[in-house]
Image (cartoon, rainbow, N blue to C red; front, top):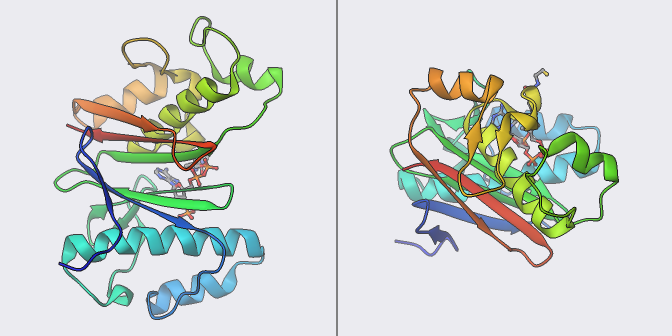
Length: 211
Ligand SMILES: CC(C)(COP(=O)(O)OP(=O)(O)OC[C@H]1O[C@@H](n2cnc3c(N)ncnc32)[C@H](O)[C@@H]1OP(=O)(O)O)[C@@H](O)C(=O)NCCC(=O)NCCS
């Protein structure tokens, strides 16, 4: 098989691909529908991030489907808003000049999030973390927990349509409540595992996937 530069994260059984956002070109990777979308973005930053996420995802899909022609791997969204290609869910994230994608064979319960570690306003800690969830308002640990919440909200196909407070990511066990729990039940309550890595430097990446 070709070397696609894909990482394997054994804890979650996922394939992961990171790319730098700057300096990428679509080449022959986009379908006609995607090429039209790419040309329609008004904001350059958004267009570049979108492309980087697509190229990372197509790298994974290309390897998984053994399809060298990436333009045949059209990525749209499933009915929950999760990026999908021919029924296969792929999760996409971009932050601070990086983009990444994650995939897992045999499940649609997959979500990934990449977050730059930054100083945050005190209100951010108050609005997005439950009492006791964070021992101290530390930007590093808070970013890690935030990435877990977003990864899970993506696996659930909710994104920020659900309150991040509906997930308790701090502590020994991840606890879902409210809308997050409701969607999890609708999806059949699949047992899942979450993995986090301090990669790239200055970032946290979290991946949530069905076992
Ligand atoms: C998903 C979401 C939380 C990501 O926000 P973010 O941290 O700023 O951005 P990230 O770069 O980590 O992730 C963006 C990617 O998430 C993916 N995504 C978007 N909606 C998603 C969903 N419902 N489920 C899973 N993944 C989703 C997309 O692939 C998107 O990248 P793309 O637009 O380039 O394809 C946010 O975009 C969101 O909440 N979207 C849904 C909003 C919604 O459903 N609103 C309904 C009315 S309130």
